[in-house]
Length: 616
Picture 1: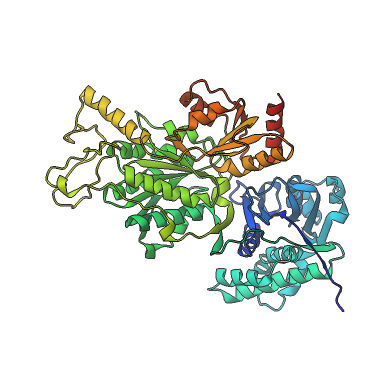
Picture 2 (picture 1 turned 90 degrees about the horizontal axis):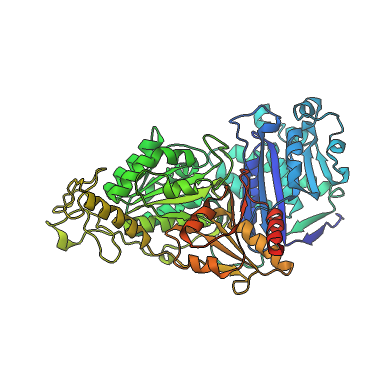
C-alpha cells in the first residue's frame, strides 16, 4: 500500500523559477501560472529578464527569473520573496537566493553545480551551500539533467534538444509540490506545440517524470500543498500578460466603434509583444505595419487616423522621444491616435528589460509648443485591457491623441483575467461630421459643449478639407499666422482636453479618518494596496488613492489631496507625479517615497517607510 501524502491547504504561495536565459524559465513559470489561473486561483507574475541579449552560459549576468504569486483570493503583487526557489544552475542560486525567504524550499539541478559551473558563478569553494549559508535540509537536490536524458533516451532527440526539456522536469516537480493536475499542463503543451506534436509529447513525458520524482522522494519535502479558490465567479478565465491585454483592448475598441484597427510600430523592448499579438488578428480587421523606425511608425498611424481608422502606435520611452514631432502633428490636426508607452529603465538605452515610471513628465510635457494630450496609466496586467479600451474611446470621441502608460512590470507580468463580453463594454461613438455640414464643412468647427471638432473622412463628398502642421484659422481652416488666432487655437486645444470627463478619484481603505493617504499612479497599485493592508493589520488608519487618469486629473483630486493631514506620493522615479500634483493643487506639500531600481516596489519596504511617516 502506498504511503499517504499529507496535503496542507495554504492561502497563498510565491514560486520563483530561475536559470540561464536559455533554460526556459519563462515558459515553465508561464505554464504554472496558467494552470493556477485555470483552477480559479488569483495570480500575479513577474518575469525578470537579463538585459544582455545572450550572456555567456552559466554567467551571473545571464540569469533569467520568473516569479509567480498564487492565492486563494485576489492577488495584488508577485510577492516580495518566494517560498519556493527553483535554481537550475550555480549562477541562478547565487543571484536569486536574495529573493527567497529564510525558510524557502530550494530546488536545484545538481548536474549544473560542477567545478566549472561554480567557477563561472564566482564561488570560492565547492561547498556552495555553506558559502551562501543555506541549510541543506531546505534543498531538494536533484540530478535533473541526468534524469531528463534518461527519460528521453529513446526519443530520438539530439542532446541539445533534450537539455531544453530540463525546465519541464522542474515544472513537474513544482506541480507535484502544489498538487497541480498534469492534464492541464498537457493541454497547454499540446496547444503550444500543435504543429510539433512529438515535441509536445516529449515535454509531457518529462513533466510527468518530474512529478513522479517529487512523489518518490517526498521524504525530503514531507507535504504537498493545495490552494483552493475562495471566490469563484462563473466565466471564462485566462492567464494574460499586460501587453496581450492591451492588444485585446484595442481590438475590442475597434470592434465596438465599427472601425479597422491600424498599428504602426517599430520593435522595442518591452513593447514589441503588442505588435506580435496584433499581427495574429487580421481576421478581426487588424492591420499591422512594422516600420523602419519610430518616426515612421507614428507617422503611418497618423495617416491611418486621417483615413478613418482607430490608429495606434506602440513603443517605450526612447521611442516616445523620436515620435514626439509626429505626436505634435496629431495635436495640431486634432486626430484620434493612441500612443502606447511601455516604460522601461532609462535614460538612453538604460535598463531595457527593467521597469520604471520615469516617462510621466515626458508624456505630459515632452513636446514643443503648447501640446496638451490626455494621459492614462494602467494599474495592472488585466487593467491594460480596460485602459487601452478607454484610451481608444477617448481618442475617437474627443478627436485627440491619447498616451497610454504601462511599464515592463505589468506588460510582461500576468494575472488571471475573466474575459468580458462585448455587450458589457461601454459604447464608442466617434465624433463624426453631421449631414447638415455637407458643403459648408471646415475642419475646426466644434461642438460648443465639448470643444471637439467634427471628424470627416477623406472621400466623403461635400467634406473636402486640408490638415497639416501649420496653424490654421479656427473658422476657415486656412493657414493662419495671426497672433490672436494662434492664441485662440492653443486655448481651444487645451480646453478640449480639460473638458474630457474622467471618473472621480476613488479612495480605498480608511477613507474617512486615515492617518496617512498613500498616492500613486499606474502599475504600483498592487504593492501600495498591499502595504496599506499590512499597516491596517497593525492598527494604523491608512487610505490609498491610485491615479489612472492623469491628464485631465479627476475633478475631485484637490479635494482628496487636501483632506488628509499626511499624504505620501510613492512612485518609481525621483518625484515626477509629486511635482505634477504640486503644480496642480495649491498648497500641496506631500511626503515622497521614490525608487528607481528597475524592479517593482517591495511591500515590506513600503510598509516600513509609511509607518515612519505615520509615527513622525
